[in-house]
Image: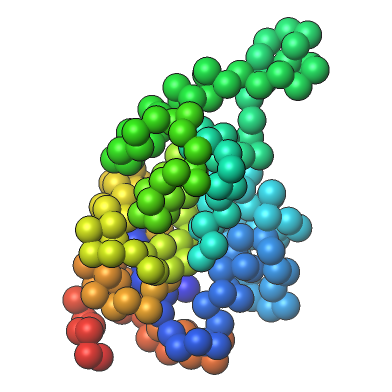
Length: 214
């Protein structure tokens, strides 16, 4: 399977086809038992998800990995918190205003309208939560974004907003792997579709070669 900058690849297959396992290998959760992972032509072997993140690979799993009790900004900077300068920073005091402003700017850049970046995620709608999760991935990724069922359980309007964020990521030169059982969504935003069956690629072709029925 190949992915190029500024390309959206749809990854499809029945349950048990190996999609989740592949994603976990690409994002450093699992160590592959065979094969190679090449990034910019260089073989990479992630020992942890943190190493994949450092390489510019962001993964959004189905549970979206948001902390509902925290603010939008706190979720955008989750695991990457910034501290204030000086002695207070060494004591762990966070640069909250700076993170609020930067989170709002980054989400706005990818086309996400959130009323207030200091608002609790628990107060957002399902679509807004998913948009924040994807926006966080787009904001931090500089190579690849992997999205596992990002439109699942969303209404038509909310799903449309998520698809637009995927287009924005593509326009910014990111490679996007889009996993979904909703084939019309796959057909709408992908450039190529890769079909997995029992852990093997059985078809890899331009999206124009497929129909929803086939």
